[in-house]
Image (cartoon, rainbow, N blue to C red):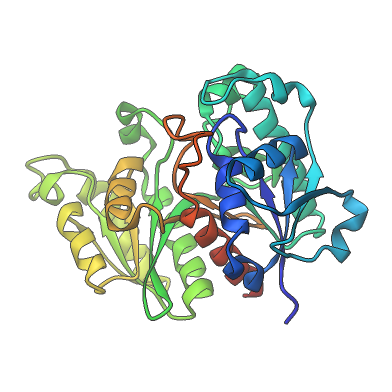
Length: 336
């Protein structure tokens, strides 16, 4: 099969994104997986290559060149996006120019994928405050991509390869919002929708019918209503509806022990009720191997599972393995 063509966005250039891309590009495994083009500012990519002592030439291309793009450690194909204003932005600082550059690269790459000119996109991290300073009021990549793709049924999943080319997926019913807002945004319909999304995606990635565990919201799964009744009113009915729809699903289960059981192979997928309930556990299991996958889009999109890491940016210390894993998962999804 022809290697899939992936568009890799530079993310916020003041953060670690460009370094993670170049770091992954220097590994032969990347070029065995896919063909790729970086979408962003070529000068930024050259700076990252120089910092990491990468000898690959950064070659500017146009969208007309995409069908002939090959992937090689000898050169980095870069499709320019955004303005050169970003070249004046200081590294490792929240700056509207960084937010605008990340936005421009993402929109360009997403449109290429929507138009089927690339097979999927992989995104380097953006900084949400910089995105807002640039005038783009989105909580993050996930919500912006959903709008670009005109979908309302979507979710973030963190995926971690675990054993025998199989992995663990964690989807989130609520995502980028204050913890105080989680309770009013939970519903039986939302829990059911996320369970169905992760069932389809995990089946596509690992080719098996996933065993899904659903997190409780409250400690001890509410302790029969003593610590809250969301389990009885909202979550349990969703689990029953999902079971009637043919899903292999169990819950609501106490989140602390559920993640241990999932780690041990009892579950292939977990439905978490809010951001940190899923993120903390999966990142403890494999921070630099975890991949962010957006569910419900008509395009393939994966990302690193970390942020812009200003404390490491532009020092040659950025960790590239999550970017390489995001590329691997994107290539796998494109083939499915």
